[in-house]
Length: 281
Image (cartoon, rainbow, N blue to C red):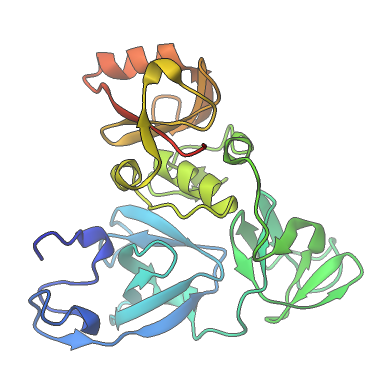
């Protein structure tokens, strides 16, 4: 698999996606089956085990092309949103129903079994989750799957936030979680991806991918709000020349802190800034 990133290439020595025939070596090739994430959040792991490292998360309504489901209930496949490959609990997937019409714009919302906030929620949906709304009833959106979600927490699928820095700031205090993508737990590149996606800006999953794909190189000395500051294995979002926001394992949360302080601390640990990328004109 020369020059093919294994994180976004559905190929193993024993199995690969049919479209990779002739590009990779594998014992067999399969077409794959499109499935839909029906859990609020589903872990995507690097192996078929709850003890395996979580590499990212799949959100409700997301499509996944599944190439294998093992006897232990793990599905190996590729996310449609960013191409990430991994193992997902098969119980979190189902044959796709109605196409999504709306997405969650609140940090988190609940799915109720009926039109009352007094009912025990069936599930919780994070920012960016997608749903199919069949109709509205009073203050609720009634999903095609039958649940009721406060309609004030939803927006049309094509709706876009206008400031990804402001979106990231809404997640201040969220705990750090390797591979996380929600207010329950999020990592540095997950924060960037969630914030940019909310604004309709395509974004790869990992910080090294983001550094290669996003924006243009600028100077740290001329930092502006919205600039992305990269280190090897880490990324932060500038709020201006002197402050930044990032999900980090030092504070174990999404934190706003002075740029100079963070740059010095991380450099003292042996990791200098590798680049600054500007998305905004």
